[in-house]
Length: 482
Image (cartoon, rainbow, N blue to C red; front, side, top):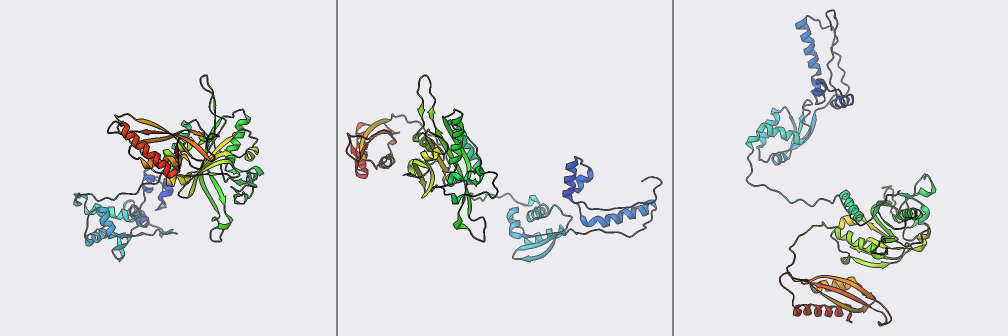
């Protein structure tokens, strides 16, 4: 506009706040206009603003209005509609406000009450009130008009105990990773795609239960894995081929299953399932050779010790869980640990025919855990502190002759249930089976630690406890003291 301008075109427009904000951010250009428009204005005031501007041109500058108004409004912006509960108003504000007062405040805010049913108001908020789009926004305005100072501070606070939050899976995975790393393990990460040939002829993981890839890149990556075992053996094979045969590995990962029987027309994904698993693998030497110690080979008990530490970290005792020996096409010997009738983990020595597929001659010990099930059943582990006893511990040993079917877990359970006050721990330090024992028998050497935190134990008390333990061993397990 200059001194020679004779014709002026006036536009009054409404701009979408989201578009304005995104455009200003993309160009890095923030102006007074963008600051105003991105917060929203009244879309119905454009015509009024246009007429007002034209009127000012005519009255103040001697201009002449020479055309009609052209209004382009293809998608009119409707006012905001939502329901407001009078009970919710009182609950959020914290005071019983008369219903008539609430209605008066709503009317003063230029909000229309369109309908009412059972204490719920259906309201219509003008489009220019872009800051009032839901029930809580209107209740905030009601409180503002009613007055914060008119809401008294209560003399007591009502509250309810909330349920415990679900465990954070990421934090727990990191915690387990730290525990395993501290024990000398190294994490591996492998592909969820694997060879379908691994599952051919297996009963534990049948080939028909594999989730198959429709257009595989190669025959080596044509199915989704059902177990982490084969990924672990591939990692062992790679390391052994590079002369690194002493390994302690772990991996977290999903495993996938297809169940033809679950197929139905309503849900095409019904046959498919997945769960999160933890795999632990040990092979070779468990400890390195040094000048004052020989290298010790990994064995089943290396794996079991790790499992005990892991379960104990979750507040679970492996002795309190049901354990049974299993033998299948994956393991030469294995142990299955169950909880609530479902398998929590299995561990054992990998069968030679499975190792042969990977050209592995050394023994490989493998553990696989259903980590999702562990998360659901785990207890919150609390660290408790107590004063150290001022009185000494007493240690007693027993050699028991038992049937071969009797396990240490059973004897430990009998001992702890028999003497709950003074018995601090039970441990196994020797197992003997040989020609010097009757057929079908074995010998367990157990160590018992007794402690009384209030006084020094006397021989009379100790003998009474040990006699009671021996009697219960004989009655419940048929044990004989050697």
